[in-house]
Length: 150
Image 1 (cartoon, rainbow, N blue to C red):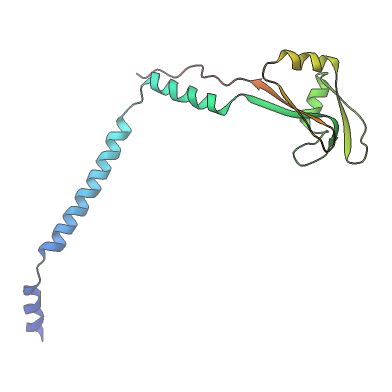
Image 2: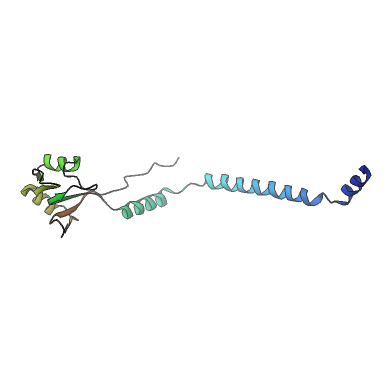
């Protein structure tokens, strides 16, 4: 029986598994080399500035959304939230007393004047409860600079 096993081993070629092992090693070395070369590549500052500026333009300006009129308390809109408190403290809106689940929110004359001066303010009327929603851009995102490569 032992002689049959030796005879069988002599008939099988060990070249194919050896070639597969060498191919796998070369593939691993090739992939590792590719990643090393790609990681050493540096993106030029001008190209990086263009890509970042394009991304910031796509995001659009930072905005704040609020409503006036009879504002219903919902998950997205809470008249006694920090946003409305800030607007009231700035003198732009006046919060009234709750009337059930509605809170009266009035835009002050100073608020009307400020919203008229800001470009890009959009307003929409809500037919259900008669409130007016405002979307106000508060900041434009800009790339100030990138670090210089040494």
